Length: 139
Length: 142
Image 1 (spheres, chains in turn red, orange):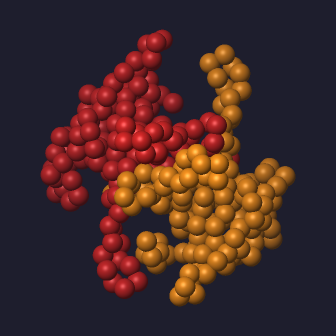
Image 2 (spheres, rainbow over the protein chains, first blue to last red; image 1 turned 180 degrees about the horizontal axis):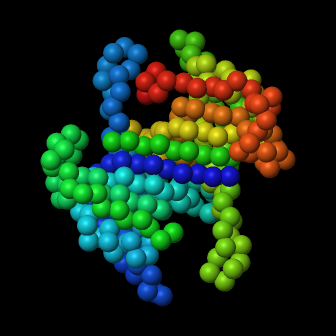
């Protein structure tokens, strides 16, 4: 009985670092994954999925230090559902409409792009890529 | 730019196979993944996540043929979001409240066994394993 999610995408906003009452750090950020494919009629299709990611513990601080809006990351984690339903948490937005999101708890975050360089996203040249930063969460 | 979901869980209901207007078979089923861990004070914690799985074409037919409620499966697939929001599709339940679900398009489904055969997971004997259903990711029409 197992669930695992792998994402490679870009941060949609800067990470937000907060602390629980007992001092545990947690960093939250959103990641967009874009997919492209050709449908049966030969048309190029695109789809963006948004993920709300949380990183706990000491790695939360490193994430907040190293990542910013536009950073490209590889994330290994698992879905964090509403315990009451086993599905996405649903809430009411300020416009009165029901909303839900894909909430992920990251077990591992790997920085795969150039820092704060959304423009280089996609096809960075090899020489643009800094040594990888491993951010193995103490999970 | 990539997303992949790997699940091992049990079917919560019988698979349902339908056909699109052009005759393409589509099978849907839900699976539950249970996770257990020890809390801070050593107490056992448990969480269940429900996933709605959709399989297409040949994979739809093998899923419909071999799976039933309680079957244990490994599903590899992609999250299928609401294209307008990039998040889960939100719908209205019969009681008028809003609900949302994790909708996964299956790329691979491996059949691991039935209810009560959980212990066999990971090392099923060859003769227990029906033919695998696999499918080319690029063939999916959305």
